[in-house]
Image 1 (tube, one colour):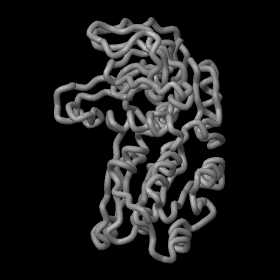
Image 2 (cartoon, helix red, strand yellow; image 1 turned 120 degrees about the vertical axis):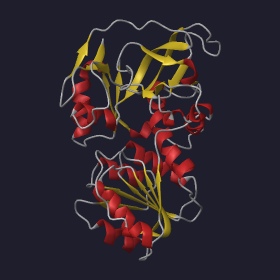
Image 3 (cartoon, helix red, strand yellow; image 1 turned 180 degrees about the vertical axis):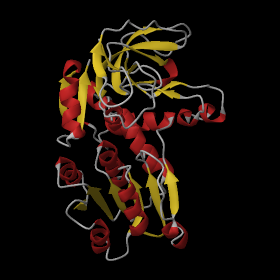
Length: 341
């Protein structure tokens, strides 16, 4: 049984019986134990993302157990508890693959949209993409390792955070909430969390240590940020919202010579006013996916409880109740939902 996107456009997502994948040389067959619902899965469901060729099994945030190993796989064994990076296929020989930056390989196809994913009883993956889980982690919290790697890559690799910085994060979805937790490790003076409305996500941001929370639907975000920074603005703005409105405000409230890190995927190219980029000498930094080392670091942070993914999980459902889980997240009634195949 698997959750399959059968055609492009809105809907066309259904449970189907599918054949068990055959393990290949250099690959492992994984039995997913917990799979997180990503915002990109929601976007594919409602027709906003069409980066796949149907029929395609969705799902890429997962933890599981090794069921079988292919030829030439020596570092893993059946029964191992693992998390898996999202890189399904890649060339393996370009500069980016050789330096652990598989997301930038031109031949890369992602698990759950480029190749079949983890909303299924079994998923096939390259063996080198599997990372052993620390014994202290449960499958549910480990399933969100991928989400943490995205936040970690943006904050630790792409941004240049320094102690004492003021950080504004736009979008309190799972990536934004994890970026908040990672940013706190750098000792910022204050962290400002921005979301659409006073909801469970902003409440969670406050619980996780945000110094100020701003609801864009009822407050003027630019005025609010200037007020809580004494008119100075933020040293670093992190856009995990993927909206034009958020990015435009970020450009306006970032200090001269500050940084704007764009993590959220914008649905389509849109015209932007670049005056603030030039006149304030801003650094606009893109951040995409993660690296091999991000995954290792994320697991270490989770194991020593410096960062929590468990707190983000507001709902857990069996795979058969996928529609209920999707609707809860689309209606902003939860933060993160886990499906159990």
